[in-house]
Image (cartoon, rainbow, N blue to C red; front, side, top):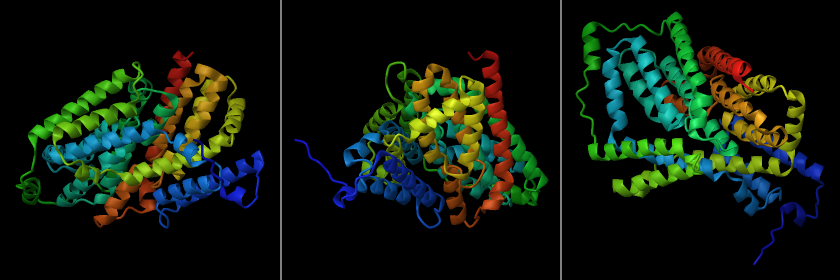
Length: 448
């Protein structure tokens, strides 16, 4: 049985032409973007859901069509990885890692910077950067305040490391998750095509962070040796559940292995993450209701709302027109396309959240693929490098930035927009130029 739904515009007797539908879709998209930018007044999840509701109310997409444009591979991947991380957290794994890292620093600010930044980059690559900063930021605040250091520069360093490290893999940064799903790319594809440049960017970015913090006097402590010894000695016992930790680490290892082999077998990353995380819930014997309370539902609903708003643009043919223009500008010069897509993505991602931008741009590249074929494959990796590394340009460039900013404010160490720019902008510019430049050079030398 089929049911028909009438839009608000049709009820009012308004029948729009295709060009008017396109304009209306662009207006709604622009207003949603504006609300996301003004997150001080409207939460970005509310903004995305309002935009999605407007799309359906005005009949740009029916509710069934709106449901169809949501990329559930992305939603399942995020949901599954969040569950695995929650179980790891419940087992005490991250507390153990943080305590070991604290001991390794020996109270030296330089070691604090490098050890916690490298740990953040590593965890961000395999757990996703938003989840990583949620547990790393409070730990860093505790460590640096105990050592008599100013927390803000170290928190900014954590943000920069999380975005740069997250660039390396399919699951590391939300833009990569989106690209992987839209372009049909697997975990191994990102390891080969993006990870080498991301690793170089991590080292280069951290070296520049070190230099900037040294110049501003953020790498020195005035604690006496006795106070330093007391700061490092922490008698608080860490509660750990070793059997649960081993189960969670085992399932996490299996998940990564399946990511590697799943794509050639036709298994999407979202299905793998959902399946393995559900199995972990089964063998962990934990209460799912309690675990689900710690899922970042606002992030998942933000994605779903955005997919609907962007889906309206796709339905109106906007991306087809943009893709034709971009194809005309690039022609068959894919090297020019790498620079154009990569640098524009970095610049735009710095001033608008890189998630909605990537959802939009991925749709454009998918349309370009129908015109240029497999030759345009390098543009996917240029988008990944640009969107992820460009997220460090400003405080609103990426989700991890906003999450750490909220944690810092809650801990009494607010990060101002201008304070972030002092570190983030030069590091974003350098890592983007180095990462994209190396990729462009490799393509020119070995690309077909």
